[in-house]
Image (cartoon, rainbow, N blue to C red; front, side):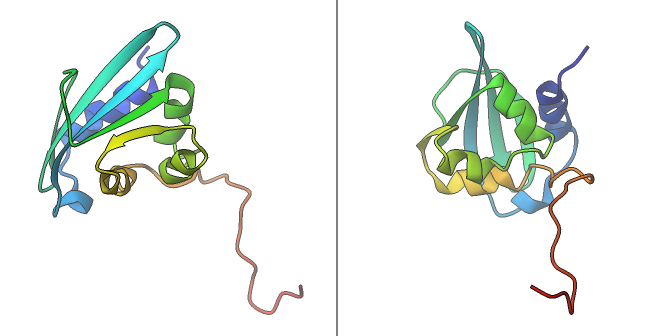
Length: 122
């Protein structure tokens, strides 16, 4: 069975990413799963993303544990919020975390958060 993280990275390389049409950079994501670290290397060239498992230098390196990253790629956790809470470690160009966030899905449809309706009392 394939996990959500693997599905996410497979999808990135198979589809153009228009939200990254102005980005040319490399990002490495290091995901710790117990005593093993899996590396995902993204080579972004104006919306085209090549994904590999290389462990090499990148413009930015994001470090996460597997459980958290699974929640990120399913939209349950926001990448930027996780970084601000110290749950994600980031090395290199911090602006690339914003670009990486653009690839993530929004919150699940069954989210309980909602905006107040017009005319609702406070």
